[in-house]
Amino acid sequence: MQSRVISWFILFVALYVLLVAVGVVGKGFRLAFGGAEGIGTLFEFATNPFVGLVLGILATALIQSSSTVTSIIVGLVAGGMPVAVAIPMVMGANVGTTVTNTLVSFGHVKQPSEFRKAFAAATIHDIFNLLSIAIFLPVEFAFGLLEKLSGAATHLVEGIGTIDASGKGIFKVVIGAGTKFVESLTASLPDVWAGSILIVGGIALILLSIMYLGNALKAVFVGRAQRILQAAVAKGPVTGICSGTLVTVLVQSSSTTTSIIVPLAGSGVIGLRHAYPFTLGANIGTTVTALLAATAIVGPTHAVAHQIAIAHFLYNALGVAVIYSIPWLREIPVAGAEWIARLGSERKWMAIGYILSVFFGIPGALVLATA
Image (cartoon, rainbow, N blue to C red; front, top):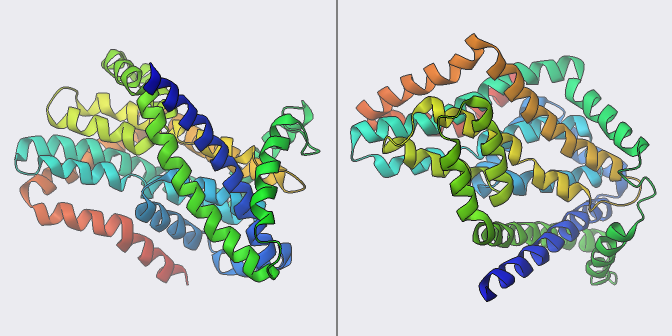
């Protein structure tokens, strides 16, 4: 009982620190780069959507948390980064985070039949996210679909009063007090130095808070999450998607959700087509952290911070709705994962080459091709 109380306390403290840290990162960028004009110059290099995409992939592959990267992106947008630049970054974050479960599958590498099943369950997530990018990135580049939809959704939510347009209210006052306290620690420094320290310190706090938040959520909910997962097996794709979403919201880590699925698939407890919907639900569930982080932003940039968080949710939800609802599109990740898993189980160097190419080689080639 006492340990559960401590876990709940850590959960709330970590959540508060996360919200404060996101606001600190935004303030730091505004100070370090001289406001919106300076930040606009900083991100001119990322006006190419493929560059933003690669930044999202690489950052998430290195940090191994799409929740952390998208929370940082929310802070960057609050600091002045254009939403149009940030959207490809959150697309890339979806791909970067899948390297975890792909690596987890190598735990079965000594048993070829198990490795084939586990590697297929892992790579189906990769292929789905790559397919989603192939569909939505050109559409976004040509028409700004997600930017427009998220802008309209943000305006609608503001219109009904869910988001306090004035940036006030008890919740934001409490978060704002924490942000101002951290800012006051650098008040005596020149703006550039103060901003730089706030950026680095804010990102460090985001990393730290999400680590503790994840551990606390697992301690409080992981047993329930596993029961939800087990109860949903073989009950249909809609149940699988909803369960994957719920489990990921509970443990605040899509990597955790998918990394639970991979060993189950490898050992033959569930099949690839049962694992597939769970990974899609994980994509949707992981957007909750950014939505929470956006609530920390106050002042004139709060609307765009909410917009990028909503854009991330819409992108992941639309990806699931479009790809899974069209039979021939739905089969592409399954067929691709089975093919890659067969090759990887027969020749281990191909499995390693797949990881290096998907997470580093292909993104780099896209940048070079569009430079």
